[in-house]
Length: 193
Image (cartoon, rainbow, N blue to C red; front, side, top):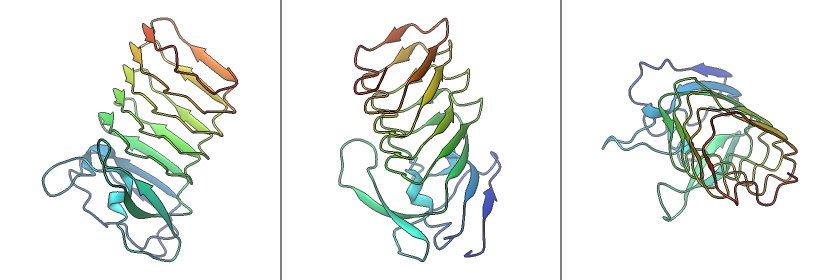
């Protein structure tokens, strides 16, 4: 799939297997259901899982952790892959951790929760819109997104956990809409805010 530049996987797809997109070094844009990135036991996996651990031309070595503190896994994610659209119900814990090439992320309106460390370390992320159905942003969800400059927190959110936007050093424009219930005191730690 070396010539593949864009990929759209409809939300009806139930399983994107390990290494399905291995070797797709020119992939730059992708739409996919996060709920379909699962292993043979039905457990949701991190983004790198669908690209695999085998080195290929155009693949960038990316370290991700599965679930809670565990040994890191090293995946090769296409270096040109900068834009993704995510469909599904929720963003899994550490799902996109350390995906430093991602600059633009679109979340579908169906997304209800953003897990802990979900986008942590996505240092080149500049643009993400949190949809109005999201009710919770987990701890450290966007920590270390050092190029993120603005964020709007929709009123649907009832909880923003600790350090959710910590270390977002360029974050200077934050809008929190009516309805947000609980914001931990450390949410914007290490930002310009």
